[in-house]
Image (cartoon, rainbow, N blue to C red; front, top):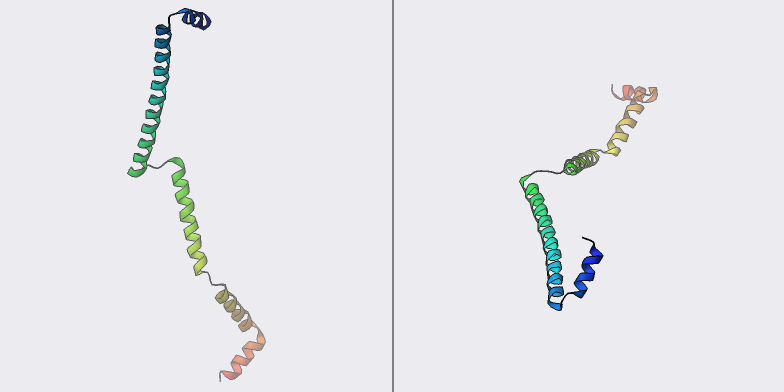
Length: 109
């Protein structure tokens, strides 16, 4: 059936019939919107249940690994003491030079 012909016949129909068709069309659209809303709500609710049950999405593992790596880097950085490293390197280089060894050997009698 051609939609233009249907509309032309509907225009010629009595007022009561036009209201019935308008009501049915509005009802169908409302039911479709409501069904879509319920479907989306159920999908969101299911995803929240899975998250609560420990089922992770594909990016959750990546996010967790990055967070763990950053925490490990932070803990290593806090234990990294540049001052002690520079002092120990300076002492090692100074003790390997001949002048320091001679002074140490003279005072160490």
